[in-house]
Image (cartoon, rainbow, N blue to C red; front, side, top):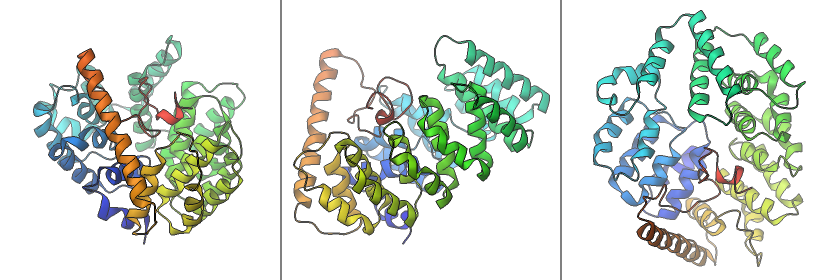
Length: 387
């Protein structure tokens, strides 16, 4: 059975622990069927207990026309403390789809975004390049990172790729210049993004080499590009970076999301070689998200540890792994109880905090290692403040 075949029966689970693990496992995987996203959105508005988690974790999945209709129907009835999560999904629409639903979407999307959508659909090569250059220059001059502006630059870069207005040779020239510098510019980071869109396999070794860089935005784009290839060439190139403290987190993320037998083998070997408990926890989480029975020996041994690092909600992910694969373990119920108790403790504490502060919660679920960082960077907690 493939990864998707194993996970599909549990896509909508009554068990909140399994449901969250499924969402985590799918979050960075690039081949989630569009109909799955639709099913998850329907569940989010049917079951408020799951709503925040689902809306957060489908962010990278394709929002098609049926998904837009579901969002438009339900956003007006949402709790105001959560509607930003749904509105965020609307900001990721493809231009054609956004303009098709322009009238009902006007109340949620600002004028600048509509102007961008029209430019992306009808602009000439010269107009797109001009706006791309302006946006990059503004990003470079800004005193702090401007997330919305970076998303705009990515949309313009995607337009260049889709219209064949940029070549592999041009990207190679930009990358060659960037590699001479200590830090990648925004143009360089966007060149990495375009490598992923174009699936330029000749750049795989270079992308893997970026995993040691100390620039989270660049690391996110390099990891995204590498995962997109979904092949063992990537796994082989990333192996050395599983051994380096400065690159292991992003290297694990890449191999975790390439669903091949070699990826499982490499993660198992990396676990056996890892000395830090935190690294071991992250590797076990990655193996659980592979949903391969081949990893049972390492996972079973790991759960015999008296102490865990706290880097991962380990009882939850291992309980879910065994349950999804229909495997038995004498401590399965204990793991479930511990994970559920932790979840409830957090939720109760969060409710008390909200009552005291009278401020809506950004996310009613706990900040797990895979959750968006509370600092607002847009990165996963484990790749940001949780490092």
